Image (tube, rainbow, N blue to C red; front, side):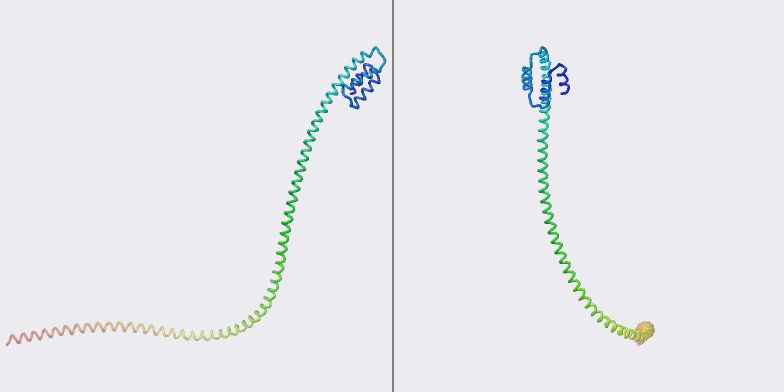
Length: 248
């Protein structure tokens, strides 16, 4: 803009025209056609000047350059506006998606929170019931323990009396055991004596069996001898008879 202003002034444009063009360029409220019309109206108001044609030509060229700059700027602004609109739409869409996501996540978190609160409440109630049950069990155990202590004291008295009686019985049993040991020793001595006699009896029995066998053998030999003698006698009698028969 500063270069355009300098260029216009270098061709001796009137101060009024220059200021008006600068003001319009700064305000950016007129189109190129409106700028030309405004320039023509201003030119008509000026007094005839031999340099006006030359200035008009220069101004026309300058205005064409300004119009070109305005068109380029308008295109850039339009492009920027479209990009801004696109970014705005994209931003709005992103914001909407984020809001939807936040809402959904918030609802999900709220549901999870309520579910966890309910679960924790149920667990707390269960723990409270368990705690109450534990207190009840503890009290029952304490009562049972007290009863067992009393019972144990009574049983201890009974056991002490039983132990005392057992100790007396054990002393008696020890005395009886001593007496039985003496009797047992006497019996052992008798048994040893009986064993000795038994061994002697066994020996006598063995000798008796041997003698019995010898007697049986002698009896058999006697019977054999008697039988042999009887046969010999019979033979002798037969021979004598035969001899007597032969003599007759």
